[in-house]
Length: 157
Image 1 (spheres, rainbow, N blue to C red):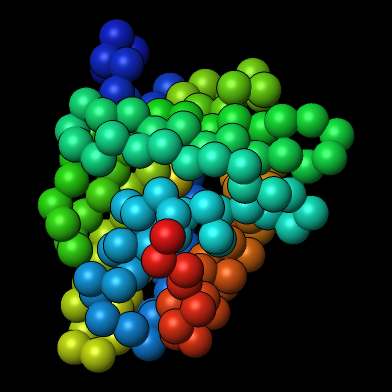
Image 2: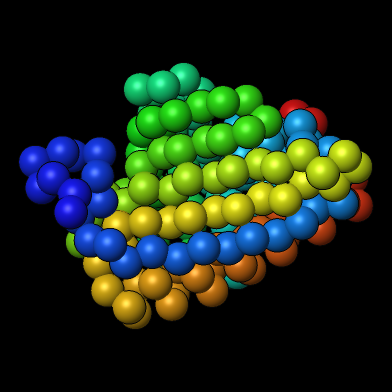
């Protein structure tokens, strides 16, 4: 059982897992998660524009993603908990507009030579509906990310 007084441990045990093999080196897949210019190109759901991404990539550093869907602003933010370049990235996930408890995302990057296996675990989701919605969202976003990486379409600025 997880301790209830530890703010870094998700409040619930509900989680989702998404795994994808990218036809790209591990460093490129990792960079797509850590470079704000690249994050802003794929980390926006359908019919949503990513207006800004800021990231202080260090343990204890914070990130903030501002998206606009035309009906209003959606902001995701959190704190980096664990960083092992090209291997693991873990951070809290918080929606500013949605009364959901902070959750934790853990990304594992497995170097397969010319390919990379990415495993995303999003833990601490409040209910099954959130698991379903976030699972659909992460699958779509990772597909978008894979297309940009594999077709070498990331803008560098």
